Length: 264
Image (cartoon, helix red, strand yellow):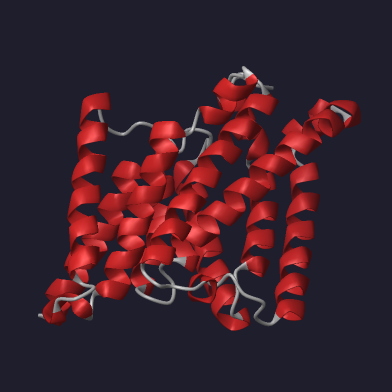
């Protein structure tokens, strides 16, 4: 019984991220809309029912992040181009990619925080808290600095030249900060204290990426980062160190991301 429930919840978590994570369109457009609506109805109903129904009440901590993830990711999917439309940009430029990521990430974060508010959850339950701040910031900054050095040694980065790299720096910063905070809140802040196995979906969700020349190697590294960030968050009691580390890790793939859109 317990194993069956574990398997069911794990499969549900995988489906949420496999079908609604917004890297690429996995399903045809019409099926994408239908899948999101179905997930919203199912997990929304389960989350709402668990507020009062005694048999389901013990699963409420799991239904909350599932519904919050579907809602946030769906908002990001349906309305992510608001920033581009507002500023008249496209994702063919570094500025457009950065604005698109900020727009998407902000909607996902708003969705998660809105459900948390309705559920009576506080920010601390999402690891948005002070925690062991000195340890958090120290580890995060050291790891981010190491990633920065490694990224600067990449042939693609060195080929750009200092002037070009400096012109890209503000948009790179917007992208990595927006993405790192959103993903740490979505994958670990929401799930880590409630149902830890679902945090492994972070690795599987990246199967969709089209900017990694060696997908198996990329997923192996991503899995290692996922475990490390989860450990750091549990050790320090907050997500700030993981966010900083994640920002640094994203520097290693930011130019391939820009290149995949034809922006560099």
